[in-house]
Amino acid sequence: MKIDFVCVVCGEETHDAYMLKKEVWEGEGKLGRYQNLHLKCVEEHLGRNLTVDDFTSAPINALLKVGIKIAINMMDDSVREVVDTLRLG
Ligand SMILES: [Zn+2]
Image (cartoon, rainbow, N blue to C red):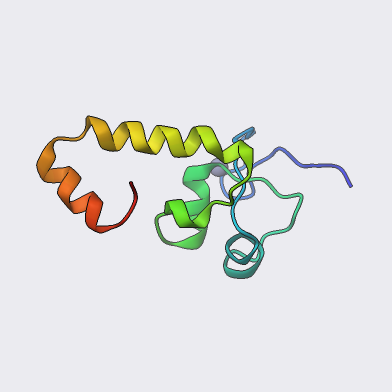
């Protein structure tokens, strides 16, 4: 089957590379294996923010997780305390 690189939410071309867990993508999102969405559009589609736990342990997600950790490290201490309670680190 041909992979469609047009985002099903906004209709723009997308090459966002990430893997969400099957229960999130197919279960909660009711999305097909060959459909593509921007990361920000996935959040719009699901009606909630994505968390680290929504992503699989696939290597394609490794850089994303590093990015999140770098972002947390750049926060000031008051924000980091709140984030720590969400177990993102
Ligand atoms: Zn989109």
